Image (cartoon, rainbow, N blue to C red; front, top):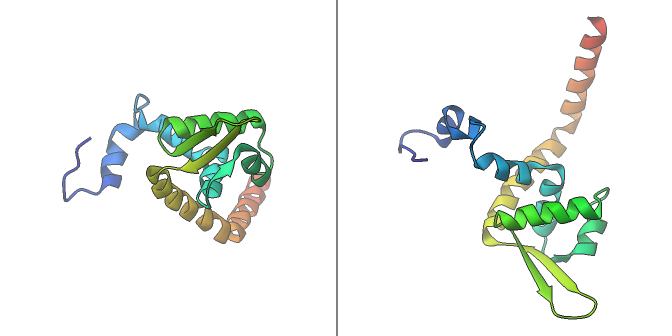
Length: 134
């Protein structure tokens, strides 16, 4: 997708391919913005971790979901997997340079959510009260 110098990328996105069901960016966005994808990126932004350490730090994630999410992020080029030839197997995960760029943005989103949780909760309660009145 080409971008004109005077046209913001957000405008291109609004009228462009990201909104198309066939856009390949959607799959990457699904990997990145999934519950586990966001948390994996935040944890790996702090440094290299083994699978078991990641699982301990990310409360509630199953082995299967952690493994699938890591594979997806690795496939997109955000996570590097290094397997050490020892017994028992020693596998480490870290962010690639592209993953580090992404983690900064994901962290900003997570920070915004955390900072605004009181307002979000208030909005939920207001919406629930309005729904009860209907």
